Image 1 (cartoon, rainbow, N blue to C red):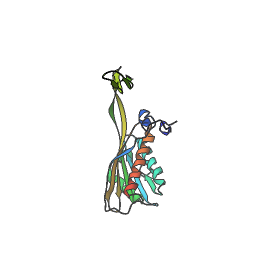
Image 2: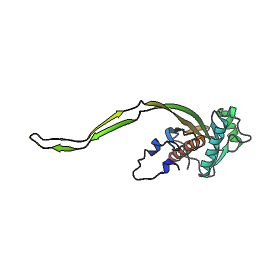
Image 3: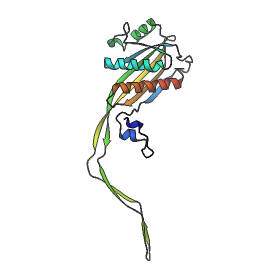
Image 4: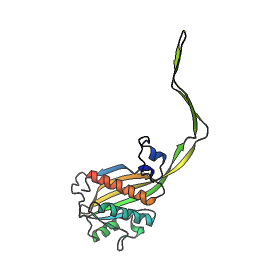
Length: 215
């Protein structure tokens, strides 16, 4: 069972952080739009998609994810890895991508670059705590106390490595011959590259729809 789907009135939303395996944290970092671009991609449009990665299987997973996600919008995706497309060693070449896209009759190109990085998270060691409840006393001066708590570390902390996948995406209108939207996103890695690519694609498409470049 995916821990993110557990519903219980006493479980906080941070469950997905404490039990991070299987949880998606994809988010947009930034985006830009050409405010003069009012056409947008509508149902029936044809878009040439290319994914630039260090691994060919990840490239194919990425382009497949775009095809699946855009199908829900009624948009046809032409994959760069398809026969007659662009070989892996040329997928970073903007001119090759544009020529291949025009040859398929696409009206726009979507180019996504993927990269995997790492960062470190400090995790404190286990702690033991004790507290004193409220109380009162009688006598000449009288006294009261309450809410005293002490937490004492009983073991050393450590640094835990984490990985994340980041993406940078551009949408170019071939009629204008210019980029009309760009955005970057990232998600934590949980060992399932396909799920993370799908998460990045999903959050990017959602951002493009909010920006109005997908209608």
